[in-house]
Image (cartoon, rainbow, N blue to C red; front, side, top):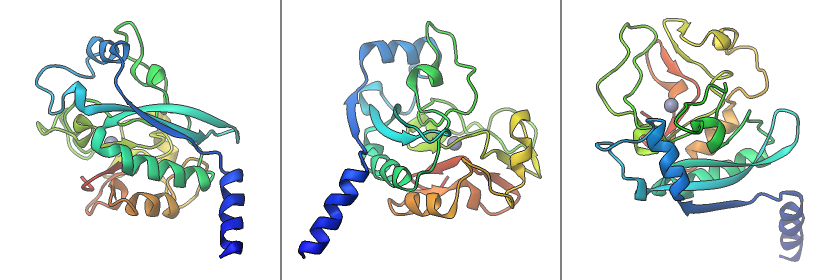
Length: 213
Ligand SMILES: [Zn+2]
């Protein structure tokens, strides 16, 4: 018993993971509305969204604190997952409200955001034409998350719409930031499913959600 307690204490000391959660400040609500990330008619109200703060590993082995906007029901699951990813030393390019959503009504163009909430339709497979499916994405509920979209592209029929992500269509060669079996297991531990395991030839490697869709 004593030994287990000591080991637990040592692990805690070596893992200064922190997390927090709070309702959206008015400045963030303004950013979401001005950038078109939230509007009247969205399937989730602003009062049901939270700012989740987490510690995460960057690509250059530094620790960072990031903030992500998600559904209040996703706070528990995502906090658990981020703690596991932190312990795995899994690197993420950035987690930032300012970089993900831009400011002053200008949408962000900074590549490779790890993010959750965006009130939009599900994106059709690159396999098919068109720009909209006419169905809400789980992102529109803040119940999905995209991890390092450049390293984990949305692929259909072998194609990706993101020019930067082309080399990452090849999943056989692992490079930093690519989703691993342990990352998938971290999400599975809270019941969230992975877009990379969809049947058929469309795979959304960046995408995890509460119901796997
Ligand atoms: Zn997604």
